[in-house]
Length: 231
Ligand SMILES: [Zn+2]
View 1 (tube, rainbow, N blue to C red):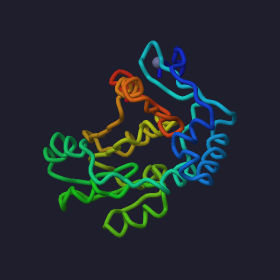
View 2 (spheres, rainbow, N blue to C red; view 1 turned 180 degrees about the horizontal axis):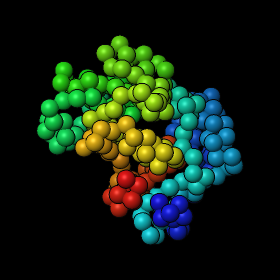
View 3 (tube, rainbow, N blue to C red; view 1 turned 30 degrees about the vertical axis):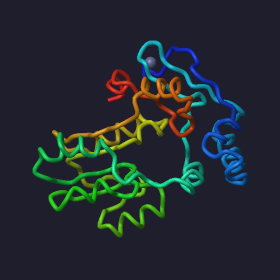
């Protein structure tokens, strides 16, 4: 964003211990809390992280600028399930999918596959999913599963009519690489559907409820303006 140098000031500062306690308080599960501490410390390479907001483009981001990796999410998902249905699925159906005749669709971070399986026979569903256990259940649901976006981008791979990313882009530090790979896999006139939390709403949530929007889970905080620049 801002040619790679967003000027801004720190909104929040967190220690590794605070971040680990956010995702799993020591009172809930001491062992899991400690594993999160070790993992977050490894990701940050130090004992603390700040969240900075760019005064020019409005983009918010954690610094160190590193998102959760496979180990982090495997610990996180021990006690959380994928949502059954998101409200933005309905928005995507209404404004994009119902207006098209059908085709090939790729979902990045498909979770339980609830969106893809709801599309019906006009759509040929593909998913990129990092978790191996989740990949198996997606395949069982009749979805073609790719291990990574690089695999989807490989030479003779298919082109897609629509690429969807629901609540994914806020987790990925290398969002520019992901977006460019998506563009490469889209047909001419293809569409990309993205939903992310709104930066200002997350800041209001912190003010109103005290709930943190904690890195390294959400490494990016998007605004309409900063997302437009990224696209
Ligand atoms: Zn900026």
